[in-house]
Length: 154
Image 1: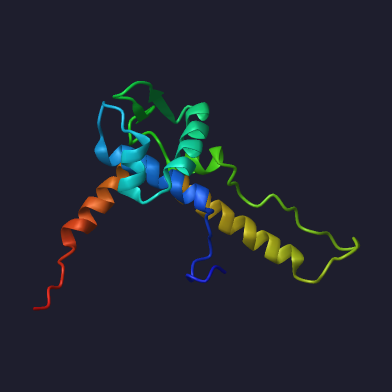
Image 2: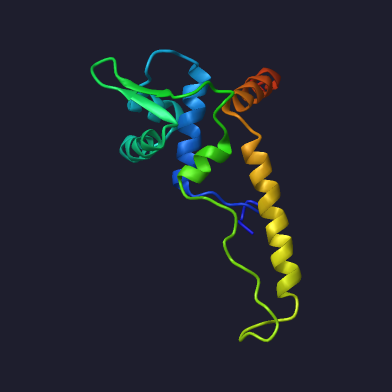
């Protein structure tokens, strides 16, 4: 289990990709957003972000425009692009390991039950990610930001 207490750990690349698409959805603009603007807003290294956005462009999740007013846009509406789509493009998928069978070298009692548990966890994560659009994330962030009241100490 990752040190933050969650059962699921995303790579830095995946976190940055999700942040970039979140920023594009947040802005909701028909105008392209520059890599530098996204990088600054989301505290992501611009060079790494450029590589990630190019990968997302090849997959069709974002489009780019060249020129001084160029940058990136979501290819679809924020309610059509899901977290699951982004993670699959970047190679995150449910566990690929098949359970070991009795009689094979290395089988340990419990392997079958634990493999089934892993499959159920993977399925639950996939369902949540596939069912979560960037529009939903933006709406949730706005709702939570509206509840935030800074505590000023004088």
